[in-house]
Length: 122
Image (cartoon, rainbow, N blue to C red; front, top):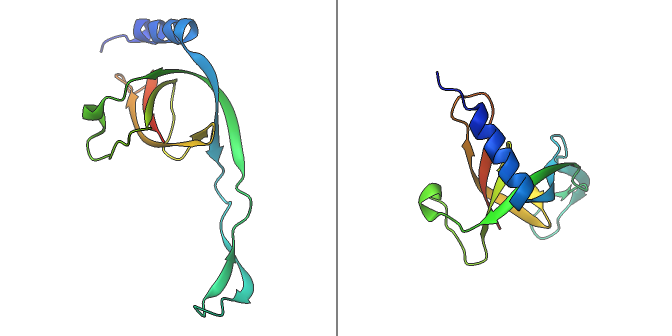
């Protein structure tokens, strides 16, 4: 099995040198919609209260780069979408600066945890 520790070190050094720190916010499981007890007079359906979504912020290093459309087949890339290279793992649904991650591709050559994540944000 190949040793990818050198690739991890190189990715970390490049992100430290060229990247910037971002605060990713991850929605916390359990922040679900709940019925309020009322009924919508137009639809007859229960009114649903959406609580303030809880988030768990974390700091990671990231680097903006051009969106590689070939990496994200099946994802419609819009004009204002951007791609970030993010240190470690990131998931669809996490947010940064009011924008959401809509697609990810993790670079994990030896299944020991992602070196970086390529993420499209919208």
